[in-house]
Amino acid sequence: MLFTIDVGNSHTVAGLFEGDELIGQWRLKSDWERTDDELAIRYHALFSMAGIDKTKISGIILASVVPTLEAAWVSCCKKYFSENLEKPLFVVSSETISHIISIATDYPEEVGADRLVNAVAAWEQYKQNLIIIDFGTAITFDCVSAKCEYLGGTILPGIAISLDALSTRAAKLPRIDVSTPPDGIIGRNTVQAMKSGILYGYGALVDGLSEKIRGELCPHGEPLRVLATGGMAHLIAPYSKVIEEVNPMLTLSGLHLLYHKN
Image (cartoon, rainbow, N blue to C red; front, side, top):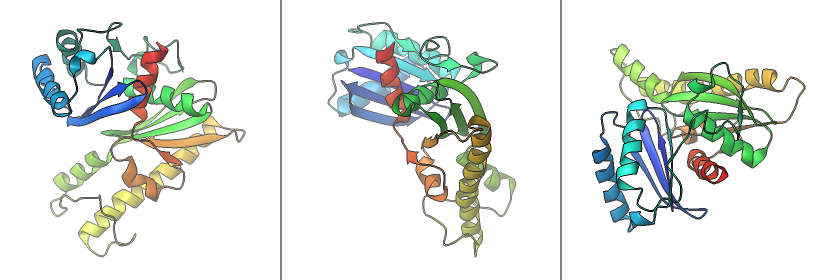
């Protein structure tokens, strides 16, 4: 079994693959102060609840954008999940996957591991110019060329950050749930107006920014595909005209792919 771990700023998504089949997936809050022992306790419990024998883990791959948690995870995996590994723990970075994807940015070491994983996974599937939009703590637009080059992208505040800012910086604006849609674009009350602003607003932002990127990435009208992933992708996709596919499993699938490619 392959243990795949994607450590984000807000959540950690872990999965277990048996061959090509994902047999277990867990999404937990990323607590930056967790120790290696605490991580082991949590995942031992999750494996036990799912009836999974951890001694059957033969490979581990880790992508992290939180340095303190990355160190804790590396220690945790080596201490508690490495009994039967076929090869050492693989930690994704610009250096460890530069032979798989060309990273054409000014400072490759600054690019988040999850962004590179998504780029590889999407390119392997489509092998064309791509925009990959990841709706996480931040919203990232990652651009990949048809030649399998990671070109860079854009970073902007995520939906949760924007909602928190509205409710904490404006006295009369409440915390709201955007999982249910507004009645229309013109909000007839505060909650409806906030929902409209977030959902229609981010949808319009995605469409406008994607078209701006298209002009630079595909100046001669080359084919381009726009994909979305991340925890909030399914909320915004219905309000966008350019998102062609939502793939919530893109990062875990990419980790699985990278492990076997490496």
